[in-house]
Length: 398
Image 1 (cartoon, rainbow, N blue to C red):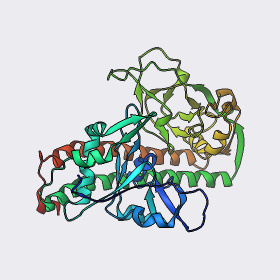
Image 2 (cartoon, helix red, strand yellow):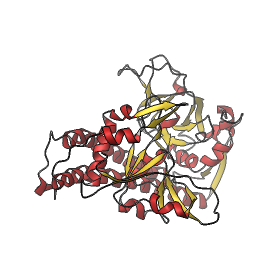
Image 3 (cartoon, rainbow, N blue to C red):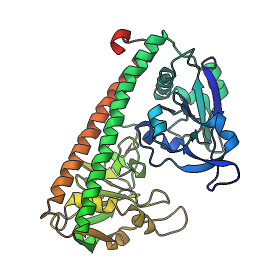
Image 4 (cartoon, rainbow, N blue to C red):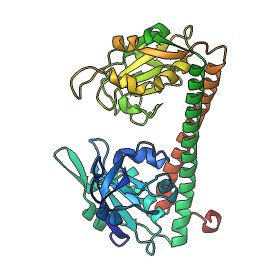
């Protein structure tokens, strides 16, 4: 790796307010990697960095951002994001990596930068980054200098590198396009919901339009048992959607129906600053949730379940403000949640709003399922391609 890296430098965090000789920048953190990788830059923070630091830290097309600090007991450091021209064009200002990340610029005369990015993705996927980190004061740090000397990269001819990167990139581009479609579907639904409110709305306590509001279970984790039931946690609820990726497994036991999420239920994170108040809809089947999450079961006789989901998605800041307790230990109990006033359209059946929202959400769910299949194909191809077990005909790829 050392022979392939032309420039590497740590990121920065800048200041919350402008100062003398500073410039506004967007700063990509490790926490932003999953969203940025699929084209969602909406939560990337803007701050003010010293102008003299920008020439060496400003990201350019073809750069790679490497996470060098953070991680957890079950997730190593070493995640990466590729910096494309399209990604940079989505920002209105220069972009730099955060201080827990490092800008890595590949020497394009030695290797194709996109190919090296995929090599690093493969390195992370098969767990090799565990060998490049140490832990102090509870924070895992990626040993970058050791990594540069120890990690060797298989380099086929440059044309084949580009063909491999293009093959994997095509799958990634489709996944990103699907994510954009999913966000657009949700935005369209939100616009239709807002329009219905303009035509007439009524505020009702949440308990009046639901059959139950309950916190989930205290799980007894059984992550080593592939047959144990999944249990959703607060990490699974982000950006208005549910992801099963951070879900864990728990020992099976009898659970009250009110504590189990079923298709059409709404989930609300109910503990902790920064996570409390996040909302998502659960689409199909039944799944356990842990005690940090509230399960809201809409009463279809009072309101369309999807309509209520959109109402709560629009009220996430207000839900966050309902938290009670000391700093870091804030709670949103079911009783207080049930008393929360929700603004709903007067008649969703007459204007057909529920049916339209159901169709939009169903389409978004199908898109998510397609992305799961595409990601599985990509993840299967990745090690086979970069390690040479499968060859890409260069002429066909071009």
